[in-house]
Every structure is written in C-alpha cells, then in structure tokens.
Image (cartoon, rainbow, N blue to C red; front, side, top):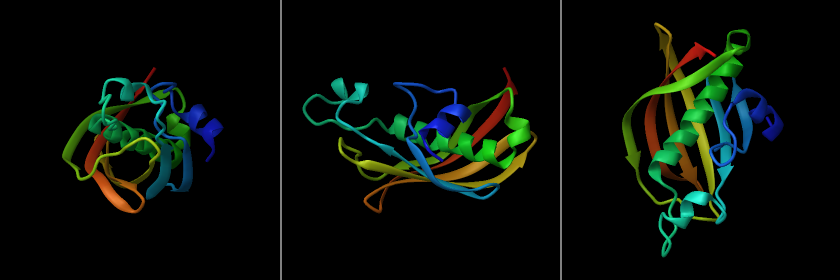
Length: 143
C-alpha cells in the first residue's frame, strides 16, 4: 500500500500523518508498515534541540494509525464514511529512543473486537530492535 492509498484511507495529513507505506496487510490479522523519521519533522525543533528524539506519544500514534489502516482493510464496506478514534492504550513501553534518520517499522495485530471496540497489539522497531510496544483500542464513528 503506497502513500496514495494511505492518504485515501486515513484522514491525517502533514504534519500528523505518521505512516509512509504499508509493506504487508493481512486483513483481520496484521499489518506491517513504516514511517521514515527525518530531521525535518516539526517536533524535533523543541524535542530536543541538542539531542532530537521522537516523542513516545507520536510513536504510539503511528501504531494507532497503522491499526486504523488494518481495521479499514479488514472491513472495507464498514469503513466508508467512518473515522477511527483512538480510545485506549494499555501496557505502553518505550525501550529505545527514535532519532532522525531512523526508519520506524510498525507491526500491529488485531486481537479482536467487542461491542464496537477494536483491540490490537503493536510493536515499533528500528533496525530490528524493539523501541516501543503497546496494546491499543480504537472505535469507529460516522462523520
């Protein structure tokens, strides 16, 4: 899934679109994608000027955007005229910093749905090393 398809599915735009490409998607199961982290990201101006580090909350947001793509590919007919909202996070862990020049690999797995809440696990990696993990919950609403 290239950036055009990502833009078709997600409402996010610069500077808040945090998925550049999807390399693999198995609807109902998992999605693999990535974000190229460049020095030009606007958050690096203040986080931190001496040692730029991607904020952990944005790593989690990148994982959440990946879950939205997986949900939309899992139920494409239901995805029309819907927005996916991030409604919860559990067990978030940050293991290493993400810096300019890194490729942030995103892997999310659908664990199930219950009463309109989608439940996922997510893992972010750089060069194969885990930088963050989380359990993420989302829901959809008409817009």
